[in-house]
Image (cartoon, rainbow, N blue to C red):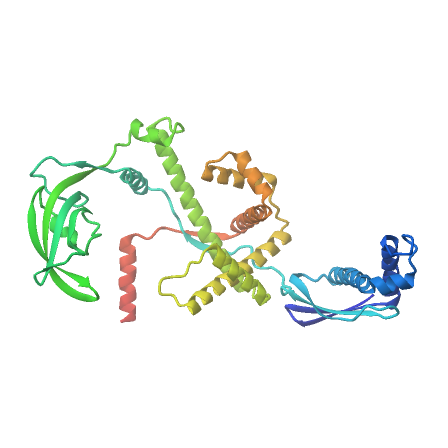
Length: 437
């Protein structure tokens, strides 16, 4: 067997294969013998059918089987001998007919990733904002949790005035040029003052009103693309004041028995905040590292990889933006796909170069996170992933990438910068404005 390799481009390899006639004859003879043993022909005992008759009756299927066998064997040898790292399936450009006493000629084409040496992946400079859980951040987190459990109580005091954050039940009658606007007029509509869900800036008219109070306000609004002014008669029927629960034993009991005290609950909140900040900083580091790695490794790869990734992204999440054209959407997806593929190829190279391999412990840790996230037993989630090859491979890839990310971060030069205050940002914006002028 003779194999000649051509490399017309960094992402294309062509192999010209010639299988000698002796090998072709030998394989044809083997297949004829194999068919003869099983052939059932009237007038002949099994295994005793004349070879000429076997060739006449089963010639096409014999040639087909031999061609497939030699095609697979010769391609495998060509790939192994020439270390062809290809993507997709080989494309058979030409193949001769298989006949006795004739060579078999095959021309196959491979789409490949351009060969490159991975470099400059250690000592990458990364500058990130240092995130720390301050007392203010912690207190705000607790307030946000409590606010999610805020409820409203009826106000019996006739003199209680409406304030921002109150919930109000009111009738609204709207007249435009003396005619009632049925669409905007409401009966017993519920308003949370300050949210302005009804009309922009409309909630301001409620401030200071009391239960059973009535007022008329002149307010502009957009109607069918035109700004018009209407007279709004507001009748307050009921007022409800927000009640924020106390952070006490009764409140935390609804979250389960894992929190034995208020202090346990606070510790878990702080732990979660610190974990989230740590994850944010890691994501920031990874993004910067990947960006620099992409700049240093400008290799080529087949367009088909981008095509497949775009289709995957469309199936995973059709996240077309509002007012985004089909052309811009496609362009954005292709840019994202190109980055993801380049990242994946570089990370795989680093993984092999540094011999980074995820352990079973690493995989189990990731499964444990999923078990906690979906609130199912660890063994159940593990069994579920083991039964699904696609999910198992996805999990393995994620764990492998995280191992490489950890390696890159450990070997990076991390520069922490303090978080900018609002005053610093304002000053920087003012300085920029002066420079532009």
